Amino acid sequence: MLELSRTQVSLLVRAFVGGFALIAILWGCWTLPLFWNQGFDESVARGIISGRAFRPEILSQLKSDLDAIEQSPFCRASATRSAAIIRLRIAEQTLSAGKAETIDQEFDALRRALVTTLSCSPADPFSWLALFWLRNNQIGFKSENLQYLRLSYELGPSEGWIALKRNHIAFSVFEALDPALAKTAIREFVQILNTGLYTEAVEIFTGPAWRVRDQILPRLTEVPIRNREIFADALRNRGSEVIVPGVSDRRHP
Image 1 (cartoon, helix red, strand yellow):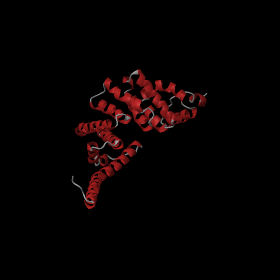
Image 2 (cartoon, helix red, strand yellow):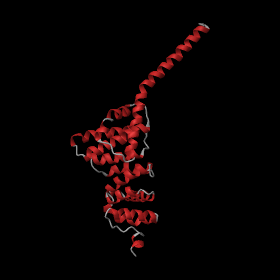
Image 3 (cartoon, helix red, strand yellow):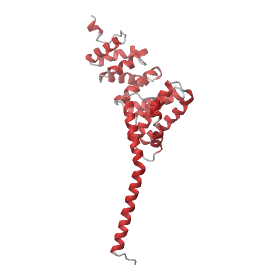
Image 4 (cartoon, rainbow, N blue to C red):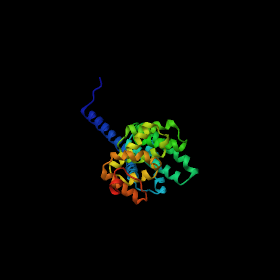
């Protein structure tokens, strides 16, 4: 039987430790730039969520970073979600600018980003909402698309920044919603007003929700009177004389 001397064992141990350390260093050199870039991309995504405006050319410079995140063998939910958020904003900007020559390319890039995100985090309510938006804009509204909106509501019923975007999207196709989803969209608007997001509530109410305001207004009795008063004042400042339940009667007996 082969026996190793103490010196040989020591050399083998050192060689193993040294090899392991080298692998760790090489791994760090490979992944550190990726994680560094992901940190910056996540910061941009947080800015988008908070309402910060980014010029299209700034976001376009991040595309190589987004490609790296989506092709990475590592599953980091925060990174893939950030990539999807940025991809969605790029697609929205391209669509708004009417750039027909590049919109299909941006839609495809968004679809790939959402597939990656949902593969990593299938319970992500933002990605299901973004998929609903994408399908409606890429192939047109179909009733089967509602499953994605429904999943977003089920998986993230109370996430504020998602609710703001989702409520706007839901009211834009309100007539196509089934009764349960329609009630959910109205209930979500009530929750937005309950939380004191007055500017955002006015934007939604006077925008995509305006044509169904008669269905929303009766539900506002569930909102504290102070919130309703502030909401009514904000509407008047926009030039709208909508009668908010319990407010106009108090001010104009």
